[in-house]
Length: 256
Image 1 (tube, rainbow, N blue to C red):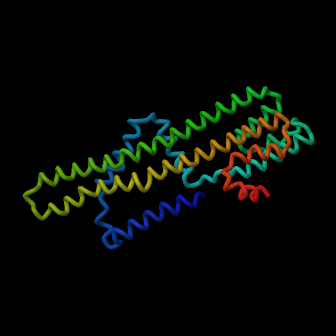
Image 2: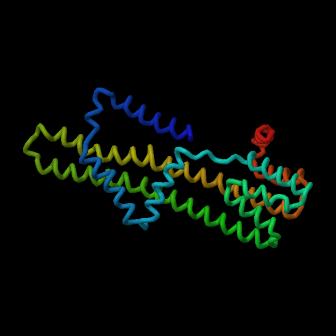
Image 3: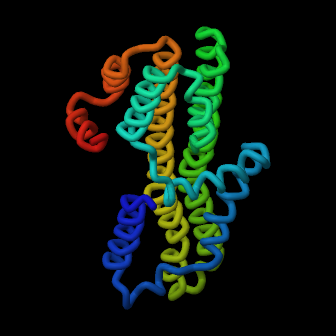
């Protein structure tokens, strides 16, 4: 579970409730405003994107809360162990180890190397897969980015609807203040949806995507080194280059 996401959402909700005042919280709840802002912006997703993309985006949302990204240090350690075994016993010895690998991308790469596939072909196959992984991730983030754009717009639409209704009942002076307050609630809902949920979710998904793509590229480099029969120490040096200089010492500690 991603603790940072939980802290962020709980913090936002807590601060909003504190700022509004728990005793006055009822003044900020309006069902019609929620229908216009939440319902309207959600319905727009189905207009803008294909059904399967929208439904898959809801599935991607769980990654924001439950994804534990694989660290570069873990991947480097595993690839160096493979390099050591291949150095001792030959690359064919990795065939049995490949069946135990959980990551499908790494498993495929090791199997291709064990099967004696040409290095350029391995690189082409895995590079193409990385490209499509990146595209899939971008599609998911794009939907939440769009949602964060239209939510405030629907908030404004709701406010305009409320103002029209208010102006149509100007003879009742006492109702102008309360009706104006209700009209503005939709704008508040739209702003909260965009800035507290969808924009942060988009950035989190982009961050996860960048991390995963970096890990896949690291795996690709490691697989190519394995097939070339590189010394395990050389493999380690090559792969460590993928880690930011300031984090390399910490990564080495993680690898033990």
